Length: 417
Image (cartoon, rainbow, N blue to C red; front, side):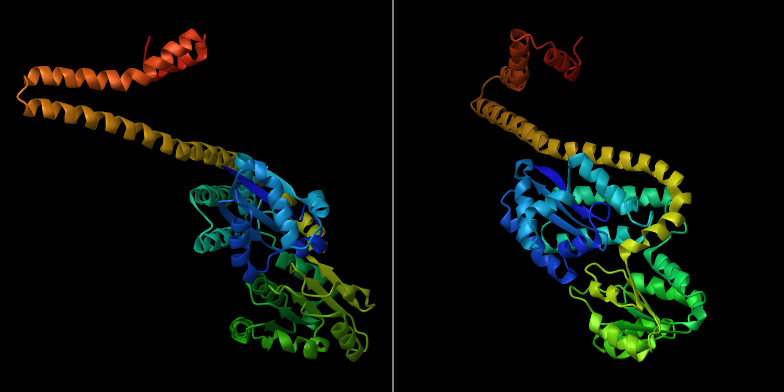
């Protein structure tokens, strides 16, 4: 059994491909059950699906990797050759190293961004609740999160993180010189939208509305920022009132269509609307970018802004890589130790069986009235002979086969000169 990390990220695939591969949150339970049911050798599974990556972490037979490609391609309706062109697969220690880098924010589009650690933890918590996490992935997640915490606490990688939310607001500033003259509509009510609202408030935006599928969630977040709460179904009717739209929902289908934006532009007498779609799958129909007065950007368009703001943390990231390597090495040692426990249990169980058999034999002889001294000597001799029989045979065979390496190991094991 081995550990496979298989998937795509913003490094290997554009947002148009990532959204096709992404698993909506409400489908993850079914997907976890399906992958363990559909691929015979997969005994454990966890799925990490965010705006920047979709990755499967599986405990499985390494000879069955093609089955993962076929299942994922079939499940997400993507031709296998397209998946082969952008996907990566990493095994065992390399998989652990990758996941530690991901959870630490070292592989994020925003270097050191803090949300990913929580997303990794949530992915494993969900898989654990579904019953698709066993000892292999439990060990991986435990060591991953421990190493990621060390990276965040012992280095400056996560200090003053430049988030996707901050990049989106920065881009808005480049379009509108003074945000105090603008009104913003935010779609979603999660952590990213919360941070967007915080940044916009700091910039003094003139007005703000927060729309969410569940109105109570929109109301709770809107109350913190003196914003107007809306339901997502009402967004189209209010689009014309806002200069900035920033979207980050968990919807599997677009929330804002090209037609709705076209109608809003007409109502605004062709005053432009700036739209940043952070979501994957996307919340805004890509065709809206064709409209002359709509400036539509996706999460991939934020890369340049983010790059400028993270250069100062590159040195910290280099030192963090040492902690990543330490974590991956620790995972390998612990995994070997866990696998060795089964052998150790068998070894002890066999010794206990020999001990019990010799003891029962001795007790019967004592019950018959045999000389205790003779019985004890026979017990000692019998135990010794049976316990040293396997290593004795091993030493003889190693000598006969010229296995000097094995002889040296046995000498070290039994402290022989």
